[in-house]
Image (tube, rainbow, N blue to C red; front, side, top):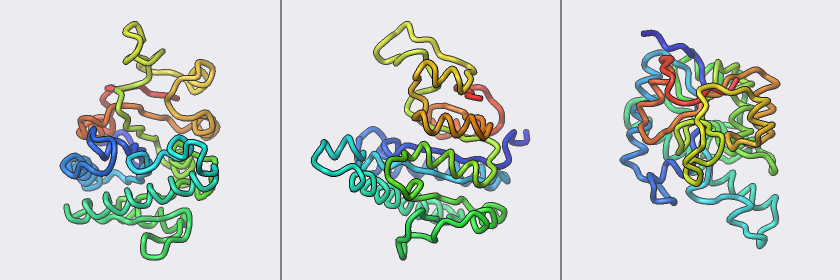
Length: 236
């Protein structure tokens, strides 16, 4: 079966790369994720990737009032660059072509983000990793993911999380929480559901980019979603 999406932006949390440890990398799990990404790229899907930095630094939360917000956010950008370097290297070892583009100039880490160059790499079959968020403080990697998705003309955003969809409440705290198969951006904002932050959700809504929310615990879910299987929640 042909993939239902030809070009996607996949957002993965930094914590997911730690494989449950909370910090650092679980390279067995990272390798499974990269194998899935390579398989989908080999299938002809154009893949952009944004990775959070929470396995190293969670911005304001980790700053705990001791680090000024702008500095805390810039530290988070550096954490995403470290994650992109690690994932790109694993992808290359598996035979994939991976390119890192950064929102700020970091010589030796990646190229400065350029939309046209990104599209060129995607057309060649490269997995393009977008590091350093938007390059500006006060914006999350969720917002960076939606921004890059809009810039590259992605058909959808795949939001790979540690939960299997969007719920009416936190299912870990409320066993009566209801999982949605489909929900609108407006409902997500009105109910203040923790899908993405409000800026990211509004940006996705304004640009009419559907968001597929699913669990990354089984990396094969990436392929299942790309082939149209309904395993999580669609926000549109």
